[in-house]
Figure 1 (tube, rainbow, N blue to C red):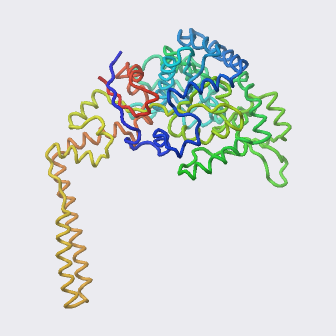
Figure 2: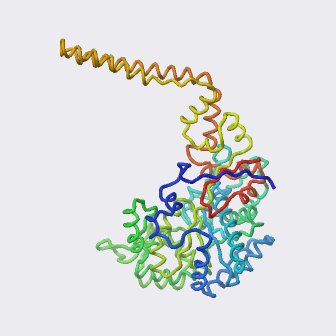
Figure 3: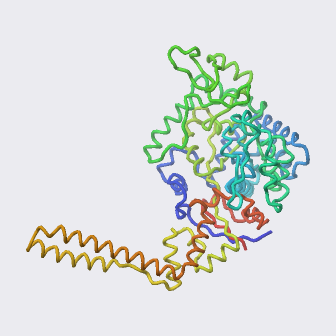
Length: 539
């Protein structure tokens, strides 16, 4: 197992996270009304007691039975740690720790991996604290999402690899159901030969994107017992029936979100997601996922609910009958998906990024209205990976690990000072020049006021000339150490691609190909409840 040198710093010190997230981490009282319990070890006792009382044996049986079926359909051997956790889920003393993510190709950005490791590590820590219970890390596959453009590509060593999809007619529906036509030619055949076989095999041996994503996640995290859940299943959708009835009849979720948005906005935070009158999609016969919209158009043929983009419409009674007979035709949107998740699983905590934390804070009232326990919301671990080579470049420039978070201009001054660069600053000369011209202007005012404007114009011209000279001198000073500054700029661009955090752009393969022990390093480094940003340096 490779060793990891891990340095931490406050999220706020990175300058890369929203005020809502940093305020939540700092336990700001302004956010207290929008969640239930803080992400602290002691808070999980009350959380598990609340969930245990609310989660029925029928719900547990449904979950365990369908998970068993999902893994059986894959064929092949289930990793022992996964098989153990699947069996543990049948016990009423077992709970889940969940994170969710889109089905990004080849895991997408690094934070996909960070989310899952946070869930695994927290499950281990909870077991150590509450040994009479068991905790299973779960990856909720966002199989019902229909935004193909967000998931059909990933970046590897600065190059974007994209998949056009199986054909235009198959897009617009749940992405988890997509066949993998064309992916081998467009992606697999373009990968470097040193890419681990597990990445290629997951897609080459799968019929759908959901299956491929499960296989890849299992190959990476199966030894840690990660359970992958695809909720786009008829048997699991049976759990939606009460929720569908409440939503269709009362549209309670939108009312609850709107009631929360007002105080959230008043507290200085912008709502992250838009709630609709009916927070449901409908899965059409053509395989599309279309929004359900109450139709209030005067004189319209359908005066109840239309399926957007189609001629299909239903009265409320018809929709309720469909919800009862075919709940699998319905798909929750971003407002109700978290509720569906919490109904299905004996879940204690949801782990998400900053944007997810923000929209969960809009949903506490929804959970209260529907009588479902609201989980602990935990920001995922966030990190920067510093390879041995990049760490060496940083040291060569005379910089410490955390210096890299400073603005580039400030870093250049720091490096320049260490290299003996003379700082060019003509502020004193500008002040003296302005004072001299002011004396001339005062003299003109006494002798001939018509010359005042001419003096002022000359003063402005002289100040501009001096400023120009300052820039030229600064450039000349900087040119003496141009190589060091170029190295610094390249390093900054490497660690902050497109000006953002590395974890939002780079793919895990960009690290694994040079450092196969990367995931083990993260497991050593991450402390989910510490709520700090980590810099993981390869040793």
